[in-house]
Image (cartoon, rainbow, N blue to C red; front, side, top):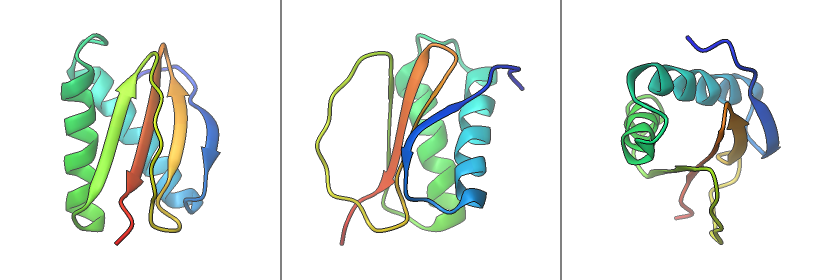
Length: 92
């Protein structure tokens, strides 16, 4: 596990799910090089689909913009190391 501290920028997730998101990101960074953002995002998305059901989206990078609609209680945006992480479940 990485020793870096995650910084939550915005969220509406319950604390337990927030911790899971940050732990999943840390695990992905242990498995993949920091430049493999697509692989990192896929790892996190698959973990959230497995635990919380399908429909999760994950964006990872150092510089990106987005506009989306999400299901209530399913959104987190945080940074860890040099990357930003956006995880959400699309609105039905």
